[in-house]
Amino acid sequence: METLRILVVEDEYGMRLAIARALRDYTIHIPEIEGKIGFTIEQVEVAEEALTIINDKPPDIILLDYKLPGMSGLDLLTQVSAKQLDLLAIMITAYASIETAVTATKQGAFDFLAKPFTPMELKETIYKAVKHLLLMRQAHKLTEEKRKVRFQFISVLAHEMKAPLAALDGYLNILRERAAGDSQEVYDHMLDRCLTRIQGMRKMIIDLLDLTRIESGERKRDVSEVDVREIVHTAIDTATPEAQERSISISFPENGPVLMQADRSELEIVLNNLITNAVKYNRDGGQVEVKLQADSGQVRIVVSDTGIGMTAEESERLFSDFVRIKNEKTRNILGSGLGLSTVKKIALLYGGEVSVESEPDKGSRFTVTLNQDAAVSASTPEPANQ
Figure 1 (spheres, rainbow, N blue to C red):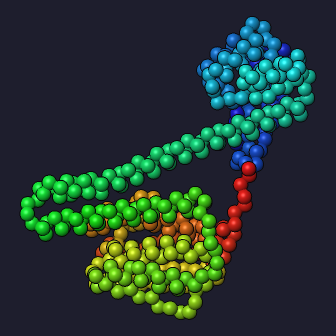
Figure 2 (figure 1 turned 180 degrees about the vertical axis):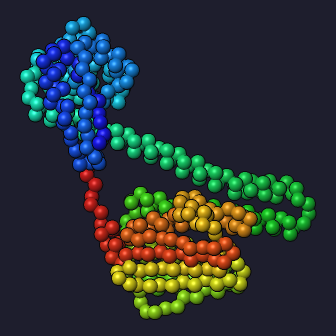
Figure 3 (figure 1 turned 120 degrees about the vertical axis):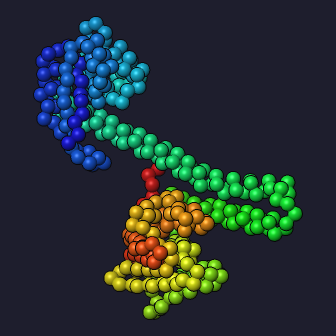
């Protein structure tokens, strides 16, 4: 149970005692926040003592009498508001009027409680304050987390783009200055390397766009009944030129239609990533096998290869954003590190999952499981509140 600190600043002993008694065993539950919330109560008679406590360790909520000996409650509220602390103040007074309520609110009070008040009125006011405070803290936390994720994302993206841009810059300067001698073959090789780097950056941009469209939820999904076999054939056609250059065979044993409700372009992203990766990370003369299975309301896509494989540690990191397995075997293989993380996000859209089994130098087997009807409900989200 989360415990919040309430500081009661009130010069009347009986009032302080009544507030403490009403709130001592009071617990609340806010539907938007997990768990119960309870309270510890601190009591002081004068604003000066309260200010010392606030400066040392700010409470979560202040119940502040409007009229106090010495520094007034309004003066204390003004000083607390200027500090911009993460707390809420509730003004309590026997001099209830529109003017005092407006003045207290302008100085930063969250609410206003007029004497005399019942324990129920006190609890209702505390409930509203706690709900506002905790939801506000939750919003601030999400904003901070979003800022950190955005910073990390941009940092990683900049790092990933830095190497190919540096390579392009180096090659183009050599070409401009003819610094590599008179051999046209050398310059042709540099041009090929430049084109390869550009192709890699283009792939990263495409993968990044796919990822952001899916994560943002702004992309309009076009869900209909599709035969997954047709999409497999299209993905195989896309990967075939590179496979033929390296004598890699691609097999796809068919067992009839595999139908599901889906956005065709999302399945294309999944199958293009899996099959092109199976070719790209394969050995020359290797094999790729694609299998489709439909059973118990699920479609299972399995893509196996006889490639370089991965260790268990490498496999665990594989589906995170910008993660690429970098070792001597993959040094010359271009990739964005976004394709498989996008595959995972699409699988989750369909209430499914993605997994990999791999062994170094023997190959990998990727399995994507999708619920056949999950896309129907996911494609029609409730409209956001205006």
